[in-house]
Length: 389
Ligand code: AMP
Ligand code: FES
Ligand code: ZN
Ligand code: ZN
Image 1 (cartoon, rainbow, N blue to C red):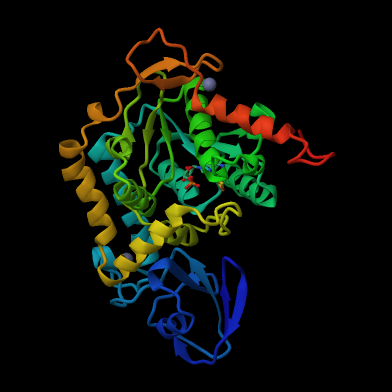
Image 2: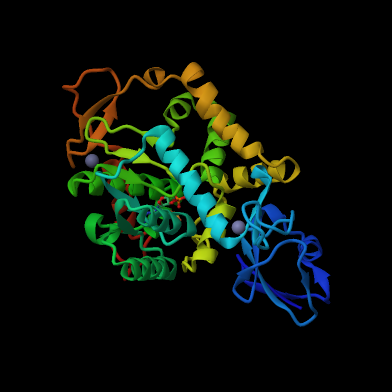
């Protein structure tokens, strides 16, 4: 049989017939981290593949094992969610995703039907699925795409987002970092003290907030999922980053020129979001950002997936336990960093200063970083003649 693997793309040939579980074991793939797709449909671990079968093993989603029938009806399941000890047919899996989003929204009062929501869409599975779910649920939700200038990866991401917006007749805002601010993410590799991913995260947060406030949206939504949030929590705990721990929340209220921010997918894993996209026929960009190599969050995700493989539910218990029991008691928000928020001298966007004196003038982290990237870009020792300055 022909097995297509991703990131990096490659083809393996294995003899059939063989069950999916054995194929994954032979290829040393953790079933928690992939989905298996044959002829455009999800298949589970017990499915036996013929010698002439062609399958794709797609990262971060998996057809797990488990009972053959859906937990809500008699139909054959297409996906198992081990932490819920449930298997679902396609239709009931979509219900499951909506129910989890509904629970997240209601539980934390994230958004309401009379509000205008701006969802940040990258072209990846999570944010496209989020936009799709919120539209299906009847919310007033527009999209925001940020062009980061990462070569063909950015071009393809934007195409995927545009196609989705056209298909749904939804409004899409676009901000191009290069055109609006004079630098792109590849240029940030010239900085010595900060990783390009760090600059990317800072830039995105800045543009998200500015776009939400300037266009008058009530709330900004991102596609961060359970895996993202658990990995971030693990990183913050490992270094006891107490200010970050007290701010980690799927729902942050608006304050001082900062828009309200919500993460309605925090109860759903990345494997579930990828499965949702396959089932709903949403075309998303499967490849990873080419600049992400060495990203520490990916290492934390690997570690958590290894724990989850042996004890399903570990990730959710870690994150939900923190949010529901540990955070408010041990990391209350007002003890975070004692910063006062003032408008940035340069761009007018809110920025935190220490000392509690609001007459202090300050330049925000975004403006400072942008200056440093642009200086580095103009340095002829880094960029030989002919490079963009
Ligand atoms: P990441 O930082 O890549 O893990 O992405 C986290 C979330 O940020 C995604 O789920 C999106 O909601 C949003 N996001 C990431 N990249 C972009 C982008 N280029 N444009 C708009 N939103 C983005
Ligand atoms: Fe930001 Fe890759 S998407 S560095
Ligand atoms: Zn069903
Ligand atoms: Zn600024």
